[in-house]
Length: 220
Image 1 (tube, rainbow, N blue to C red):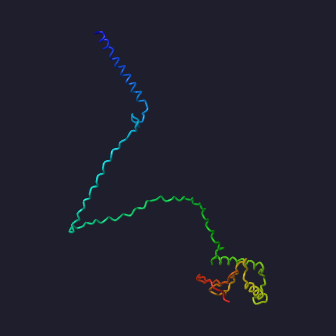
Image 2 (cartoon, rainbow, N blue to C red; image 1 turned 90 degrees about the vertical axis):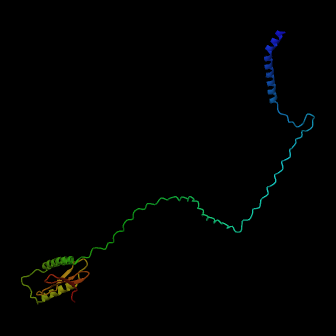
Image 3 (tube, one colour; image 1 turned 60 degrees about the vertical axis):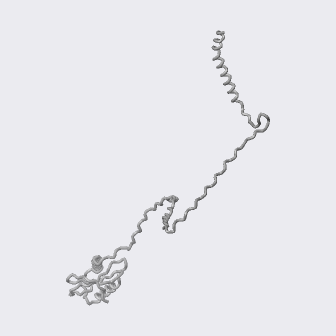
């Protein structure tokens, strides 16, 4: 009898462990089964779902009327601050494409007006007149050489020569000819008077003993 009890005591933990393993396997298999809707009870009648009534709404709290302020109280009015004008939102202005500037060549300076040759001064006119007088004198000496027997100053030949010279001197020179100079002063005069004729103008030049010079119109 003792042997049987001791043998059962030795096998009891193994049996308990085997039973626990089977229970765990059965529970795992039951958890894997799909849930069936519990729409009907065991006796075949449809299940009834009982709805609980809603809680009653709380009554709105009554507003306590405010007591009017005393007439003797001074009403304090607050002056509203002036509204500041809204600043306009700066919008980005559309950028205008910058066109490249055309490179213009520098303008050439206008040519200076040509006024022709400068007008000769009085000194240049006198210098040219003297050179013309010298040339005329040389030409006359070549054309009319001095003869041994000179004709009398009041002779016919002398008067003819003076007439030819006067006629020649009365005609002014051409534009391509030099100026003509004729002395009008007397031999014993204290001033020398010269008549100068050019293609454009005729005038007289007077030179005094003290060196003064004068340009005047010639007497008719």
